[in-house]
Length: 386
Image (cartoon, rainbow, N blue to C red; front, side, top):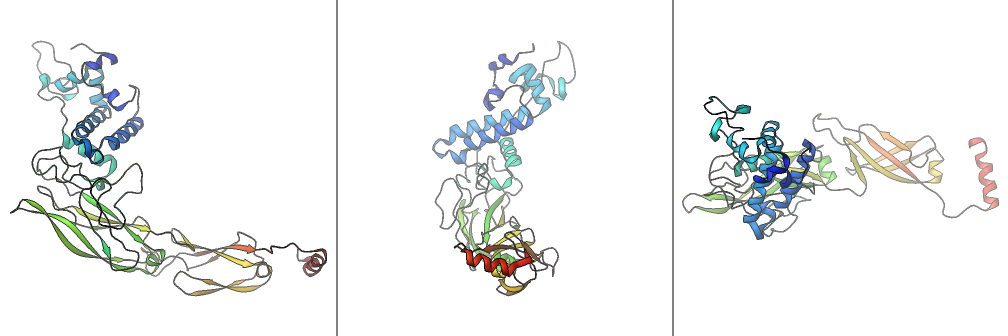
C-alpha cells in the first residue's frame, strides 16, 4: 500500500478533521479538542437525537484514540484508516511475519474500536463519577438502562444544612432540592447509567453527590442521616425497581471542602454490572462572618478609632459561640492582623490540635472632620505619640 499524503486521508475517516485539529497538533490540543466535542455530543446531552449523538460520540472517541497514540498515529499518517485497520502496510508478496508496529499482516490483528473503548476514554479523562452514556450504545440490558440523568438519588437530611437532591443534570425531573452536579462547568455530572455494554461485568461506577455543610458543622462535627432512593434490578420481573435506604454520615471536626465519603455498593444495581458506589463530596456553605484557610479561621472585626489608639480589650465572638477577650496593647491600623494560637479549625488528622484564628481589624473613623479647635485638642493629646 503506497504512503498517502495528509490530503489523501479523505479516502477514509479523516481523524484530524473530526477533531478539528491540524496534523501538527500536540497532546494538550488533542485533549482540549476531544473534551469540547465529547461534551457537545454526549448522548445524555442530546436526548432529542440520541442515535446521531451516539454515532458522533464514538467517532470523536475513535479519532482521539488514534491520534493520541504515537504508534497508531504514525501508521494512520502513512497509510490512512484502511492501513490502520489492516495492521499497517501489507508485507511484500510471499513474505511472512508480522506487519509494522507489531500488527499482524492481512488485517487479522488490525485496529478496531468499540463503544466500550469510547466509554473508557471518557472515564479516563473525566473520571468515573460521570457514569454511563445512556441507552442506545449497546445491545442487551447492559445498555439503555442509564439514559439521561442516570440513577435517581434522593437525599434527605435529618440535620441542618441538608436538602433533597434531584436526578442527574440532563434529563428527568428531580425530586426537589439541589441537583447533582459538578462544580466544573466543563465537566457536568452524568448519571451512572448502563453505559455501552451488552451486559458484561465492569468495575463499579461511582455516583457523586455534594454534601453541603456549614462552617460551624465542619468545626464541631455533626451526624447526618440521609435517605436515599436507588434503582435495583429485579431478576424475576426483569425491571428496575426503587429501593429506599438510610445511611449515616458521621462528619468529623475539621473535615475540609472536597472530603469524599464513599459508601460501596449503595448506588444503582444495574443488570450485568456490580452495584455502583455512592460518594458524598463535602461542599462548605459560605459563612457571612468567618473564612477558612486550611486549618486557620479568619474573622474580620471592626473597632472604634479610640480603641485602636489605646490599650484595651475587645470581645471577639468565636465560631463555636464563645466570646474571646483579646487584649490590644499596640496601635491597631486598618488591616492589622492579630493571630490567636489554637483557636482555628480542628485538625482532622491530628485529634486535639487546632489551627489559628486570624483576626483582621478594620478601624472605624469619624464621618465628620474635626474643626480647628478639635484638631488642636487632639494634637495636644497625642503630642509626641505620633
